[in-house]
Image (cartoon, rainbow, N blue to C red; front, side, top):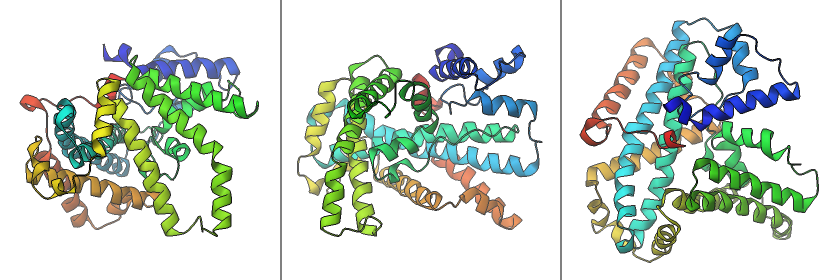
Length: 370
């Protein structure tokens, strides 16, 4: 059932047909190999959405399954489960309670719920992607990365080059560029952007909330492109160093806020709920950070702080990754005893601190429904 509900399955199949039609790849004559590509089980629930040109070649010449690939893949799978069970599921408790009682939630609590959901969906989806990529690596198949530290982006356009990379690149190659991309004038470029993000929103679900979320991101990009000359002039006039730390921080923080408030529409049950939560988040109630209010929405003080520490760890890991450092590869370079300590601690933390859903049934991944 999951196989035929999966939109990723559909996009992989459509991408293959388009690639063959364009002459980018030769038609695959082996039906079993083609079936393996479109139904490769680690990816079937929520991607990454691979291309036939990459996967079919690997099926012809799979990499040998060795202990190094197994360890590397295992560490990536472990990180994925940590993100899902320890971080995403914990944040989800707070987010769900706040969104279910949105009419009475104001100020700092509503704002924290927005930030928590921003990291919940990242930890949930990136967690699944890490699990899928790690399992594929263990099986001797290299699958494309799906996230490149997206919340460190300095613009909405850059965010979409880092978030759900496989889907973003699919829409670029099979929709935006065939529509004309930026080759047919400025107005057509903006129209194409809006079309692509409208389709992206509808791809996630036939609901006005998803449509609004997609359109908001499209409008973000159009406005960003329109005001670029103004920003460039201001930067030049005031001699602002684009590479300076302060300038990068401001751009990253601004992009994060825009993305976080757009996610409200993605999570909300309807447009009015989304607007209420956004409006309520602007109420000035800083005392709620210290008067214990945060611990009345499903999470005890300890669990709330553990969720916040999980967010901090995600940020640290993304900062390290943005510098080209892959932590699991650094771990594998350590001595045997240190490697085992790190893996055992990681397993214990995930098992002991993981939240497994109501009745200890593993909760579904958010993107499984899309």
